[in-house]
View (tube, rainbow, N blue to C red):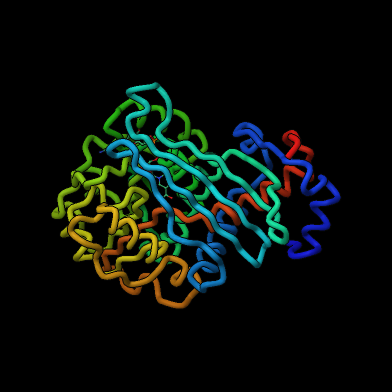
Length: 342
Ligand SMILES: NC(=O)c1ccc[n+]([C@@H]2O[C@H](COP(=O)([O-])OP(=O)(O)OC[C@H]3O[C@@H](n4cnc5c(N)ncnc54)[C@H](O)[C@@H]3O)[C@@H](O)[C@H]2O)c1
């Protein structure tokens, strides 16, 4: 991948830096050619660079205008790929009930790494959709039991669908995927949409308890209320399981988090900030490692089949800046999007 001056010169061959601003809609981002493997590799690299302190990324700055809602400002720069920018995202869990729309929304500003000039404004939802499960499965690659046969997905919305869609890319020996959603049609829609492309059966769990007791690897992507509302009883969770949390501790009892043999997070600084906002009223468990330290080989992942491992990844701007650099390049290359005057 080009970087530094060579990258800036390449951009300058496609647009006038400082005069043009590329606008990329969600549909245009979705249509860009990007393979699952490419997105996974970029995301994993971002995790490693972050934990090796080779990126610049402050913890998310947050607003909480209405109870249980949040906005996050997510800036980051990555020297290795000359990428810098900001994702501005919001999450309003009641949006479906109140307005009939999704809970998450996001826009990205992408800047020229060498001059700081804005180059693009683009959709931030698609990038969030595709990089988040890659973080979960980058964790699973090193921390799930080898040869895991069962995966359970709690929450069948945007993230649930993407997790189930790519689960077998990492957990290649899955024989069954369980899904559960409070809103049953979401689970049914997921199965209808994904079963034709997923190699093992996807079944609707009859209860959260069945899903938790039946799945060696469990991912959760539901809602993040300001105070956790645990619905998964500690006694349902057993040694050997791997828990991939996209929604903090929302569904689990504190006892489960605290008895994990390994508790990992994507960014210590970010989770400490969330703790300061009150998201972990019982306190954060001792942190074994950042995800990127494990992915980068600096700390061991799973060391025995008996370990209970929790991977709590809240999402990082470095993942976005890594993947969107490639999306931006591809859009320029393929002449996708439209230029606005800066
Ligand atoms: N960690 C990250 O990087 C990251 C990135 C994106 C989203 N998220 C978080 O992931 C969660 C899901 O995001 P999304 O975009 O998929 O949302 P979504 O609204 O599309 O889907 C959420 C689903 O969870 C279901 N649900 C809610 N409470 C539930 C419960 N107690 N049990 C079972 N199902 C329940 C809802 O019915 C809905 O179908 C949100 O909390 C969001 O903030 C995290």
